[in-house]
Image (tube, rainbow, N blue to C red; front, side):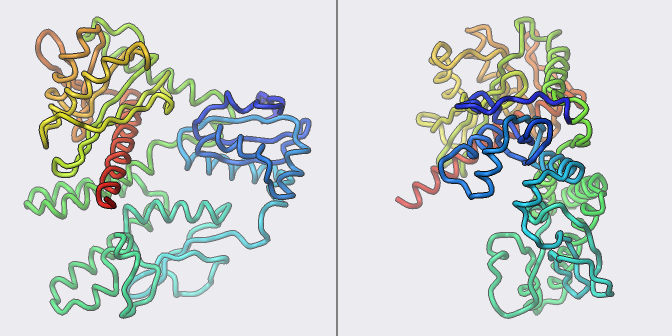
Length: 437
């Protein structure tokens, strides 16, 4: 870690910092005095130089003369790398700023409806189905549980007649309170099995068996679909999608220390891989410095919106993100909406910049609509289908389906998921405004 580039702390020095997740190190000469993690490095580091700081933090900043940072790919990787470095280096201010409480554990109780709870120490008794930890901080424990609960809802309360708030939010589903009220034995048994399945998934994830959980979810989803239980298949699909999101391919934290430029190197390799697979079919593909991706969101045709996310050199460039409220398209018609967005985007190539490649979230129909506009400006466009994760490429008047390798797939998923997230956020905002009105 001593080989990291140390940047002098001076006025406005953080304005050029990346907006990516990562860890940062405050140095006093050649000794790290504080190590932290951030979802957005620029925003987090800038916050240390505001006027109002706690006394200990203010003292730490006054002692620091240099700062280093390492970019990673996700919040979870930042959390793991931060914990690793703090354990190894024991920086003075990480210890003094921390509370005196014991480290947190996660326990799954042994009862008719197992609860998932936190604990401050290992309990040597038979009342627990499983015990995991210790975790480096209470924040990391809560982050893990909050992430898992969206995929596999669980209970943290005893059975009672009171209404469960988490059940209303879909985070305690099925809720033991509701299960126990069921008079129909068959329905009650089905709900119990669903609850036990969620607990089993959580236990396997915390035991390091994420791949097994993914395979099981995929298998159950296909099994439900084959017997035409589409509602259950949809539940498995949503759990799988969220679980895939929070468990994207992770890299050992030690690798980021060996090569502080690892994130940039991997992004370069991903772009090279994408260009290699597309170049034989897209003759007008010259470079891949700027990639834009478009997605449409609506609620049964109501409040349609579209998003444009931009990646520069394989990295999110949120300053170039744009949101579109669809105005003239036909209701429930994604093709019409995308056509409107493509036309509006083409008017701003000079002001916003021109993409080297356009990715549309969808298949050949969506690509065709965008190409009708983009090919006039010699801009290549491809589709990236949700279900099969295949690339739709226009070639000689027809369309080909290409199945990319892991490096290319990781890049495309990262871009598409960001477009989907950004479109959904604006869509929900419009719904909220209209409901309030």
